[in-house]
Image (cartoon, rainbow, N blue to C red; front, side, top):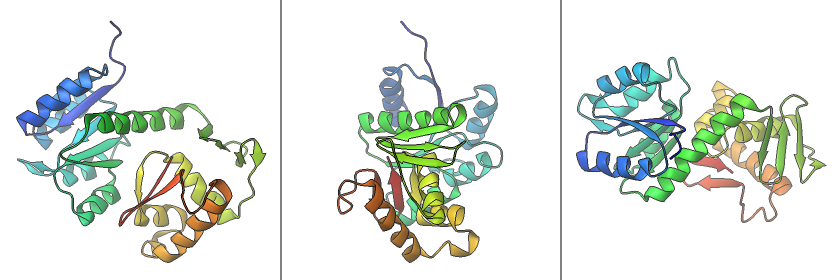
Length: 227
């Protein structure tokens, strides 16, 4: 039997959910550490050194979003929120504070595993390869060039910056504010109209049918996911 490839820290106080996650993820050869509080989670961050965190929000010693804030002070480790809270603002706030993804309970274990694998692939690509590929789209970070189906893709400077940000965060749920802050700057964080215009322009250049996008997906009320 092959050894577990990635280590996952689960911070969840519901014993039934803990058991479900353990059974589901051990089948996929993940090495797990499970705890029920932020305090324990922070201790395991140091001792266990996980590759990814699954985090509940309703924890006995405080809101899980506070844990996200603390972790983001020193680490870019992927964090996936797994919570029963399904409000749009709750999801947006969690992502803006630095969570990489948000899964609402009850969840399909297959979907959760897919989200985990996507987050881990993103980290691996970012760390090891200056060449990013999603479907037929390719970004060479060293040459600062985009190619679509091996043909040069002509973009304006802002389109280039926006598509680069999407490519570097492929598979992640990104809020409007996150995108605007990183591409346009702090003063543009509420300008969703300009973002929508540029997303539409990019879709015309990379999607087979811009009206039915397969790469650059809208997450209603939240933002976008690429890939």
